[in-house]
Length: 155
Image 1 (cartoon, rainbow, N blue to C red):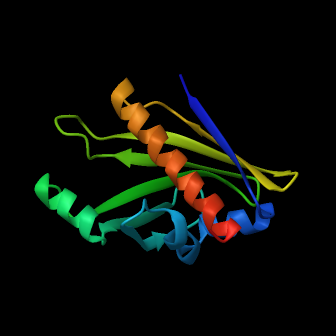
Image 2: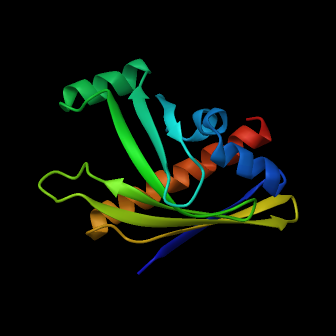
């Protein structure tokens, strides 16, 4: 069953679209606190991809990653399935980081709608292979949206 989360972002849809679909925009809000996102490929067309590396940069996050035998940087890939500026973006994320599990793709659809106070962002996600990993995905995506709201709100 798909999961949906939503937020009101205090900016017009064109601004939210720009932050979601440009290397500079993604670098400002995509990563959780203590991490940095560097975009290496961004071809915003269906069947093209976004490739980025997320790197632990804050001392606490670096220490956590090292203590748990995890790499400080990981590369991620998303393949766009729909690009409808400025209202819909859909992509399949390559899930290739689950121990003892074959790689697969997971679909996320992002809808942007004008709303009182800005843009209503609705993110709909296919589940991952089990409940625990799905909960991790949803928590990560909720964190991304919270970061986007905070960035636009100037917090």
